[in-house]
Length: 432
Image (cartoon, rainbow, N blue to C red):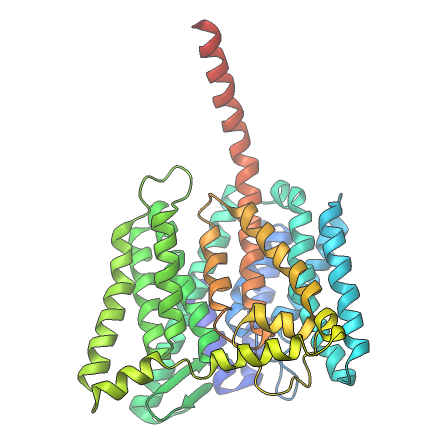
């Protein structure tokens, strides 16, 4: 719970007074770095997870949001991964070279100037760190033990809980005192509480992660926390007032029921009642307080122009032979970018780079298949299909790196058990 309190203090400090937020985060990271019993890798991963809700907050006022704690820590983790890299698979190397090459071509073929190169650097920051971290998984497995994985998973849980509590606190401060802290958006029918992320769909996707990992908590014997996290996360999504989080949360819980991890007969069907119940309550309140239920239904089902942005993106993509290969760039995208990471990547970086990014994502999901760590990645990838702004996927990158670490460490510690079981099976067969 100390991690929850520290993260909540950091979030609220940045919302109320950014210099104070910088000081509290710096103090938190100094405390983490001073833990002598922890490896450098565990410390870096701990820092990344603790600062996850602040991934779009600049270090200090006046700086761009790209210059955030998450960016600095990702660069640091990438440098450490490169220093520990013993091998690099030909396929990963090929995909990264193609992505970098076509990103350079995109920068050269557009009129975006220095701002375009800046956005392309952000794009590469989403791709290169997790790919190199995956390739250094042997080092990761040899560094992290089962206790380290348990500690890191707890930090992720407490960070998500703090994020949800931060949304609720932001809502209460505004509704009870009129105090506006952080990002609050006012629409005709609703108010959205966006905390540190100026895009409510992006934040609700992060909140949905709390629903996605609740069954994992249950399986690991932490049943009270699994119920608390799922309930608070679902309620925060309602407060956030975004359909994305509810849709993604229900989708991933459904996937966990249909495709449970290895060794799980049933992946806690009762936990699915929590987001379903919160959704039912929200729908009841929404329609019971609406002046006109017909118009309320129309607003609920309105795509807010999302599909129009898709059509426009494909028009731009196929407007010429060069745009098919290199895209139209990010800095001066004509109109509203598509509310879909895959479509935005195709339109802005071209089909070749987008296909390579897709292959890396598929490779990650294949690596995590059959484990309970796959649902967190599924959750944020599904959420990225509903919002615009590719840089918002940076949260998914941090979570993907954590899931790779968990899977790599568990593979190392489960391998002796698998070998022992195989020897016992072979011995039994020879006796018979």
